[in-house]
Image (cartoon, rainbow, N blue to C red; front, side, top):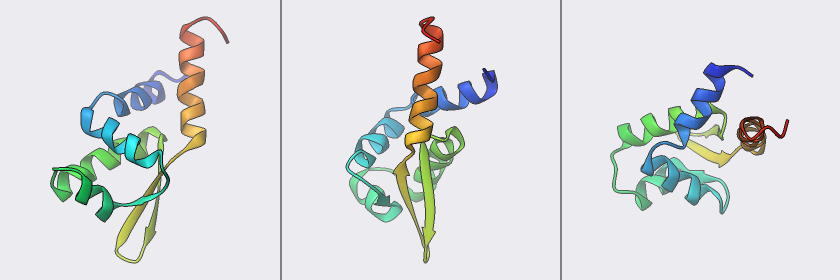
Length: 91
């Protein structure tokens, strides 16, 4: 288990705005413009949070034109679950 990668994953869950973003993404892929409309944050703040989520592997991003579109990464969620299982002694 790589401690650095594990820390990045759990850092993604340690902010209220990132949790709100993840909740919004549970209904499917969203454009950054849609996330900005639904949250009371600036574009640079959204970019900061999305970088953290992307670096963790919990969220995927794809560029379409000038906008980024984000979705939850099933693979990233599986990794987070494996780390939790490890900590519970289930691996």
